[in-house]
Length: 581
Image (cartoon, rainbow, N blue to C red; front, side, top):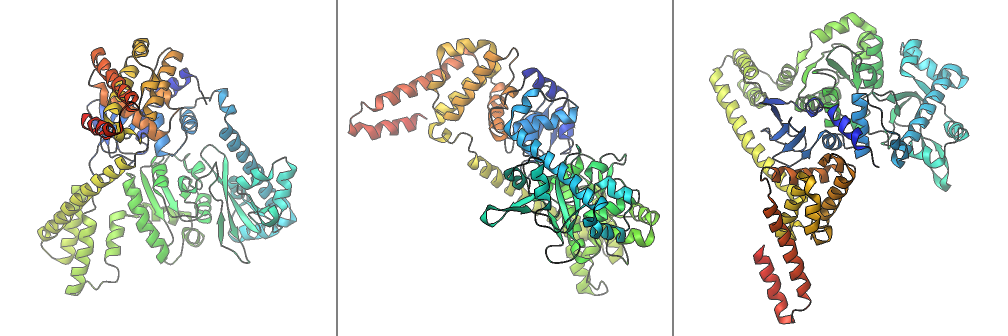
């Protein structure tokens, strides 16, 4: 789908790349520009550079490269038009009318309409129908106020197999649309029936106010306790958070991370707007990055049982990798925040938050679990565990503080702990560098944008030179075309890139490589940006351009002569061709 060039220029200008990227990574100032750890491959040394002069990023490790649209396409795993819409919403810009012609956009709009209609249906059943008595009784037992039920749009799915299906069909939605929305399922004999039955319903609403999915809790009977929507064209459970639509309005730069829907709703009802939960899965890296966009600190309020503590440990690592400070609430004598608030009230819960421990203190207490520190064996086991933990602390100052604390507690020489921690750090750094090299090599081997490149390396490099010259000197496009045409290109990918650059130069008053983004995937755009980036400093002259063109012309001439070779000369021809590369 084509969008006006002027709109794309304005979109990029209204979404400065440093502002957008800082929501996902920690940018460090380097002169006019920035550096950061690349979010697209594992690394310990910052190799991703953000150049403010032309608003683009480039990773010298995995070679991810592009402007703010490419970055959002890759980090959010969005299509071009989805990334543009994402940035337009961020900047408060109105999408051009052309968006309505996009088929995927139409499908998504239709599913969002279905979800909104279903949410009203479930809410009406809960609040106004005799069928909702079971749900009303359940929420009353959980001490939810009517205003909270309205705020969250809670509902009830009746037990009949096709109640929602028949209702939505009466509104004009097709079987295919209802199955695609995951609100209905297809059974034997091609029948369609409701996905959620006899459950209290929790609409999942995104930050734009769209109902994107549902969670349903069974009250009694058989089946899983919670049933959540599967991924659909409008919903990816790994990239959304329950109640973020409310939490984002909070003035606090911290979020409370709870374990389930009812915990979130109970905490919110107690006056804490800044609370969210994952959607039936463990915390994901995408969700951690999403929280980074709205907070600097996360308060983990998971259940106090073993499963909750294990989930807390995993969440700490993911949140730390996303650059978030983490603290953990300790709840004594209760299982979860919902129970704590009912038993002790909102004021005591506020005290829990204010006095919550940092992630390191939490992890240190885990190191001591099940150990008798009064014995030499116990001390040694504890030291082995805690030095591993100390080695994970990035801040030298914080590491010094905790090492001193452990040395004092165990009455041992601090330098012994320091030496052990430094040894662990050294080993981990070596292992990390090795893993980084392996990943980068794997990344290179798996690059599929131009699979013909290795077979035609000399021609491939010449093609890149021609592409770079044309993109960087659009005013000379007619001169380039007088010397060469796309059919002279050897590799299909570079041929397509050259064609699209020429097309865009002829159709744009002010050409920029970013105008190609609607034609290529995020990975392909990274490859194209790499071509430009790697050749920009060479300042390719017209003489160099002619050399590149001659390489392609020479290949075509040799290839044309292959058919005239005798069988005995055929093998030697290709051997010579290989040597010339």
